[in-house]
Length: 103
Picture (cartoon, rainbow, N blue to C red):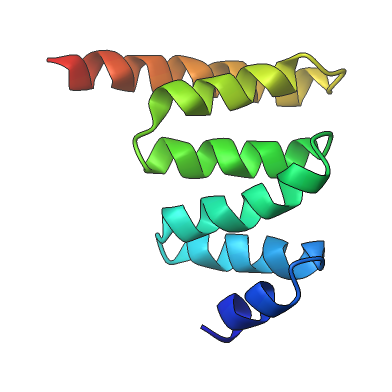
């Protein structure tokens, strides 16, 4: 709660939003996590780690289509082969989950 209040007061502090996002994620508050990461992403779309955290939050919110879109945006940038492979595997996992939930 304290981090959430500080974040509202000091919206320019990306570090605070990052810690708010991570903390929210750890307690399964994925909507708050997404909001915190989005505040950072709005100012710096090239922050790929933040985009990945947003995609993970979206996945747990069951917003699969949007999560895949965020992950595909990351794949447009030069990233290490290991990270690229992890993201591609995550996309496959999401698509399997999408197919499962359609039934």
